Length: 629
Image 1 (spheres, rainbow, N blue to C red):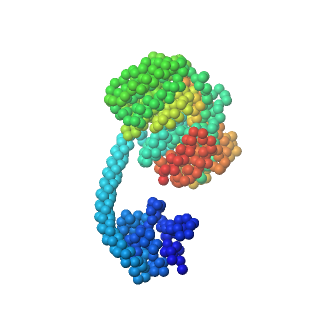
Image 2 (image 1 turned 90 degrees about the horizontal axis):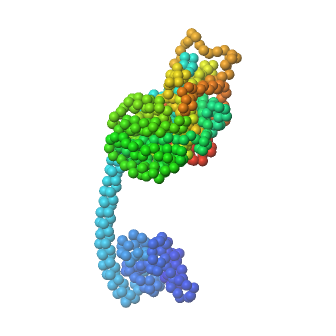
Image 3 (image 1 turned 180 degrees about the horizontal axis):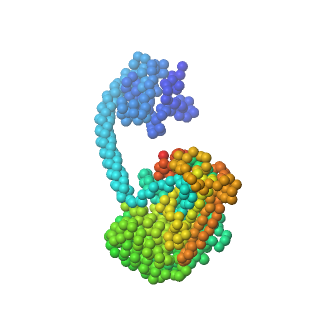
């Protein structure tokens, strides 16, 4: 029989591990209680023999044959009863007759019992005190959590109020047209992409995207597509692709793309820039004037000695901060930007007057003359209405000075005003929500953003009713022109920059497909021609008109689009990605003309069209789409 009680415990009680402390005979065994991972390895568990706490020596003096039962306690169940002495666990041993110890040991046991009782009493008080402290801490934490929740609710409500103060032009989505009665579709190109970056801001902030903030054509044209460079004398190439419509497979989608001629920076004409900067009180936010100043420095660093920059500011009044200065004097230009601070009202009209006057005084014939307006669009003094601004800017564009609008901030952002200015002022428009976007627009796409190679670019497409039952233009609602405006050189249209791409999509319902989107009309005189006639293989004819940047007379280009559609699976990556972006925009607008708004299908199509994505913009789009249900 093994009389060593420690060895006798091995294998008899769950939770105990017993091994000799060393390999020598008679050496004390090491006893450990498994599951107590924060214990001091140099401390042994507490032994309780017949109800009396004892040390390990007393436990080892027991004859193992006298042990009736063994129980192990650990963690809170041990310390709650036996106090801090039980921090390493408790082994409770009961002998068969309760007399497993000598009289001396039993007297010692009783002393230990009294001591343990006192400790237990003290431990209980400590326990109750700890409970009270924990209760108070929990109450304080709950109050802090509630205060944080209320503060967040208040912040969200404030942001909602601010968003409600933002202004967007309301418009109705383009409807399907019957080519038998409306064969022509005419519009101005649009290279703006402010809508996409503004939408990105809403999604990244976890906010609902306002329907009227979504301009699908600007979303499509945020991304660049692989169109070939022009080879002839014209400043851009024309490219078309025809395939299935992903949100309605019975329909088809026509993509029309322009590629502007890419002019090397060394060959670009001299620039005469006037920065028109809003320093009113509404610009006093981190994502407004501070971001504006840092982003403008990106543009300054690209200036050459032959380029010139002037800085005009406006708040309660307009003023000249920096006279026209050579691009070689970058320290002076940057120092002038650094000194700007926000305060006062917004005399936008006076600022525009002074900026154009400055640009005209330093006008470079054959050069790149441009006002760069940077603001949150909050013109609330002087010429404040969109109509007043439109009249003013239409007059100023006659000077030959182009306009670029850069929007900043959120809350009281006036998208409608900036869009009006850029549309009517031979201009373009971008929304700068962070320095990455500033770097994209003012550095990576500097030539396309700041150097026009063609102006007043118009598109007119004539559809053949033999192959088109109905059609609609996706986006460009505020860029549509009357058909007679196409040949009228007095009518303003969009500009095309160096290396720029412009993409437009038409959704087409082929003949014979059930049409739930238009109302059929019986016509006495139909333009539909018999099969086999001269134009029966043509889907459409597309015409373009443009002027040189300093010209007044337009040039026309014509291209035939054959009725040759390919399955969507065989379409190019650019076609798939542009279609996915348009699909996402139509979903955000909750279009009644899109029966399928499945976000997973949109993401799948975008992934198929991702292809080469060195800057990660297409990957970013896929992530944004994934945040919308």
